[in-house]
Image (cartoon, rainbow, N blue to C red):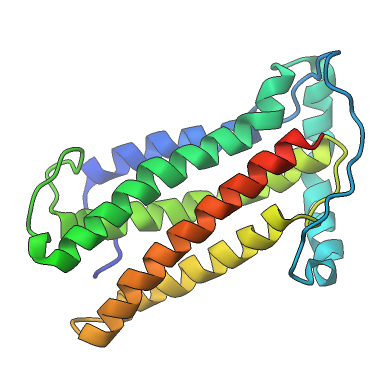
Length: 219
């Protein structure tokens, strides 16, 4: 499938979701309420050797955390938003764009690629599928950075949880999946791999969301 944004109309839902996704980065350091303690939790469960890249990632995150912490001290927004804003935004992208995009992808595989479905803005299933999934990958990439910054803003370690490991796996597999979608053409074997790999990635991202909820509840 061709992975491109060809229509101005298609940019509208992606732009709206981009605003949602970047909300935790915009309202970054939000004042902490007295009910939430600022304890540091040593998160267990990371299964990738992310300590190899943690110094470089930490240096990047530290570029942004001072202004986020300043926003926290200013009382710009409630503590709940800085703590759960990333999860709410990324969960919305996963369900709305990833979920519906997966549905459209399977409809295309079942021979319904030329069908118009609700919320596709006049595009067929085959046309809208790559738009949604490409937009989801872009927002996950941006939102992942926001999640790291917000975690550091709250004084928590980064890249030390199963949530971070599944994030790296998910983004990497989505990039491979996008490349496959651009190059598979009409080859039936490649299209089969694309369909089942995409479904597996959605399962992985659902597990990633579960780990994220556990991480958010741990401090």
